[in-house]
Image (cartoon, rainbow, N blue to C red; front, side, top):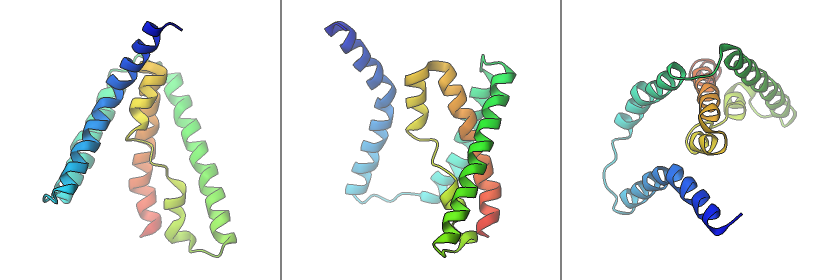
Length: 150
């Protein structure tokens, strides 16, 4: 690959990751200055408005066929079921409280940096699949996962 090709790739990567770095930088400066952070407001805004908007927009504007989305759903659910079974087995083996720790050991953090990386690596198709998996896991984590721990 030529120097121009490499620089084009780096610019492409930085274009996708720059917002993540800027947000992390803002958070670091915010923390260093010990500014007040309305955590409950931000959590409510993210879980009630912005995350559902991202999922809704991506799934509404997707160019993928329903068969691929259904295949993604099935793969995500199968992976989650296998992880839950392995986590339950290991928790029981190590004599740890299964009910209290199962959701923590089962559900991944599948958003944040993973969404732009999926977009970078696989384009629109990758972003749509990643958002679909993110939506499935988030929905199950906030329903089944909360039910397991409470």
